[in-house]
Image (tube, rainbow, N blue to C red):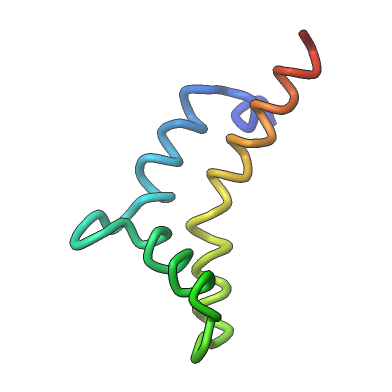
Length: 71
């Protein structure tokens, strides 16, 4: 489970899985805008997609919080 605490892997996951596909806009960004707009019409698959693409960012936030607590 050391890979969960490795900055390089977390950043790589955020830039690849978290942001893919990149064009016309990052997928997670489009889903986030959809949720902020009221999430009308979102199916279970769309919510799962948000979780899948958002998980690397959850790991990043976790790593940042843990680093701040250690200091």
